[in-house]
Length: 132
Image (cartoon, rainbow, N blue to C red; front, side, top):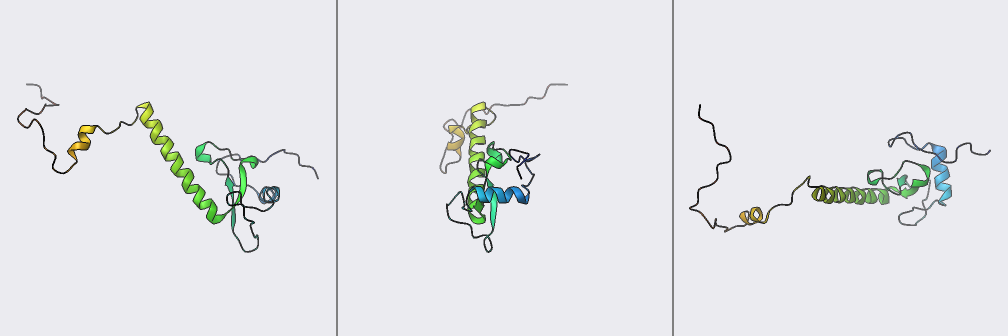
């Protein structure tokens, strides 16, 4: 029987692929983990459908972006994806000015043995109460 839909696509990012789609993807990749390349032994080994381009990094929840992966390979890749996302977010915040880099002076103050080069100068008052 021919498929009426070209490709399965999840309605949301949380939608799980139905069993028929899992089987189709497993058969398409000849039962091999797309991360390590080793065969997945179906009866005794657990496997997941992994997003090739992670959802948090802009991937889509669709059949062409899914591939079988061993459970342990999938966990390791997920950790790398989260690390990549946090690095990209940090760089983006720095470039857009949402997060400022620490000043060199503040870094020096944290060092042991640091002394204020101008101890006698009055410290600036940032807030002054108005006379009533």
